[in-house]
Image (cartoon, rainbow, N blue to C red):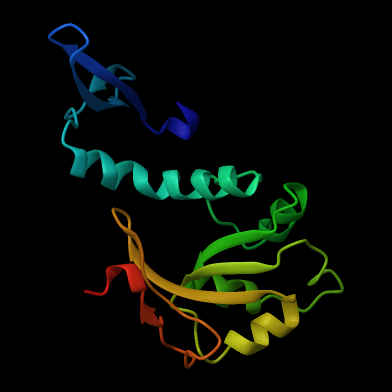
Length: 173
């Protein structure tokens, strides 16, 4: 248990021989005495999708693009760029608050010393959007989505700052 966080036991129950499969995920947690216990077992597709879709999205993109997905344990302003450099990341995801915190740091000769080409997220503060891109040499791409459905809207070069863009064409109906 990394940093005392829980883990998921993931598997499937085979019913009627091999004819029917029922996927499940069971959160394994520790109580205050250090004893392990199972929390509510998730068996519905919607529950499993909500829990795992964000991680699946990162790994799927990495897999399809021949890259590596790195999910940090927590955001740290002081070590963020060092982690980006160490993992040779070419992209990262963000929330607007992260960008503010990074932008407020003193300018450095190393601000562009990384391989990141693009960062995706939501709620980029309009006041720093272009200045952040210029300072760090990164294109910021705004999007809006949910854990169970990924992106619902995304911005392109014609999208005004502060907007998450247009609905993904496949979702319009």
